[in-house]
Length: 435
Image 1: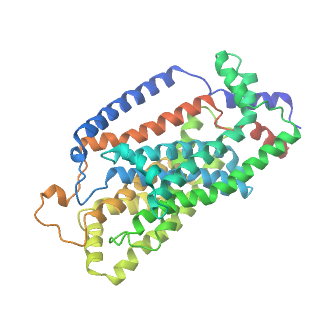
Image 2: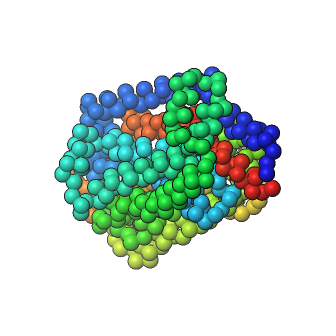
Image 3: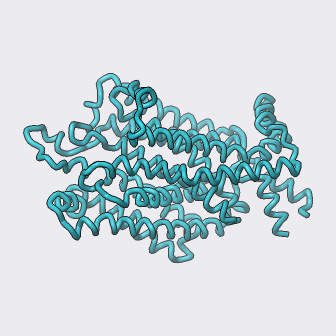
């Protein structure tokens, strides 16, 4: 049994980050101002139309859809950490589960808004709900994204119930309305044996449910591409290819968050170098699988080398997108795998630098998937202006594309200041078990 002083120290350490500080005000003020600029850009686009972007008849997608695929991908990390590792009984992942769920919920919730930015008439989104057909992958996409957000929210909330009780009892200096909210959210938690069983069973059921939903959310997104006959998208591997790529970007996002929380909230005793080492090995594993699918994506059409495949591959390997393509493959995938094979590179700081490179590479990889293919239609492009042939994002488009990232940061920041980042009750139980 753990002595009371140790329990109090764990509780105090993990509750310390909760609360509004001057740094929080400055950071949120910066994000709010940045979001206002981006919203102004979107209102300008809404008024003038998509002509203010680089989107034209041939490249009708672009940064917006690249953003959507990236956001959906990164949100899958909640399933990997909370469900797959949790159900497998991996104890070291327990302190990271809530971080992963916060990231998953933020990215999944904002993903739907990214689609709206790509619509010239966003009010027509209602047609999906009013006149949607089951044979439309877009209807599937909307459905699985909505269900995934709901399950992710529950998977974040239910394990928080005991911690909400602790917040209500221990955070005596916070405003009374906030304490009452904690009490309400704790659902009269008393820590009885029946409540413990019900909570664990609920988490277990949700962890099972979220696995097929998470796989579906990115598989359906991949089908939006693969169900066409366009060169670069006409592939049978896009489902697992997208899912493994999602694990790569999501793992990188969690590593970056771990580093920030560990240093900003003084959580070195709870997010240890062991966690970075394990996450580094996990990143190597999912990156190796992703590398396999990358090789498959280009080797098969390269071997057959049909006319239009040759045009597309030349643009990637040696043409207009060659620099971006090789930077993504080498800096965003191959070098991280090689570096992380060495234990010294799986320390917090080098791991975070590598994770940033992986995450940036993951976004540009989505750009490479979306844009070059649309620039290479089967029919020749004739008698159109040059900006119809090649896609170049505009400043307005860039600002609108930044808005979802700002929203994600705002959601993560707010959640980080109102809920314990590391599970308190679960941490105490793990310390007791290790005695």
